[in-house]
Image 1 (cartoon, helix red, strand yellow):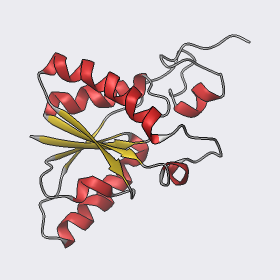
Image 2 (cartoon, rainbow, N blue to C red; image 1 turned 30 degrees about the horizontal axis):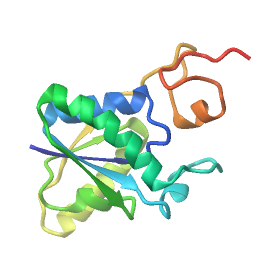
Image 3 (cartoon, rainbow, N blue to C red; image 1 turned 90 degrees about the vertical axis):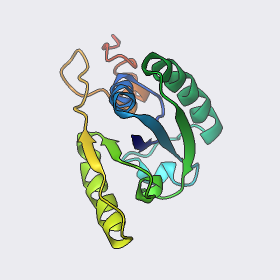
Image 4 (tube, rainbow, N blue to C red; image 1 turned 135 degrees about the vertical axis):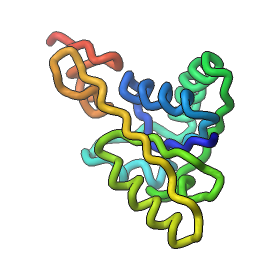
Length: 154
C-alpha cells in the first residue's frame, strides 16, 4: 500500500513521530515536505521556518530509522500546494493529525473530480506533553517544551 503524509516538520517532534510510525505500519510512505514558499503560508503563527534543505535532512534521518524498523521504503517530495501529492492516483492512505483532517477531505474531493478513488484518511491523535497540552513545533520554538513534550523550566 502507498501512504501519503505532508507537513512542514520544523522541528520534528514526538507528535510527528507518531504520524510517521502509523504511516509505516500501513505501507511505503511518500512525505510531502512543504517548500520554502509554502511553509510560511501553512503556519498559523508568524515565525521563521528553517530552509527546505535543513528540514529535509532532519526528516530523512527520522524516517530512515522508522522505515527500517518496518522494512518499508520512503520518499520525500517537495510540497508546493496544501493538497499536493495526495491528489495523485497511486496513493491508498493519507495519514493526518486531527486539525488537518479537513484538508484530507478536500483532497478526496479533488481526487473524485479527477476520477481517482478516495484515500482512506487515517487520523492519528495528538501526542500530549507532560503538561497535558499538545506537543507542537510552535510550543517547542517558544521554549515551553522539548521535542518529547517535557516542560522546560524557566
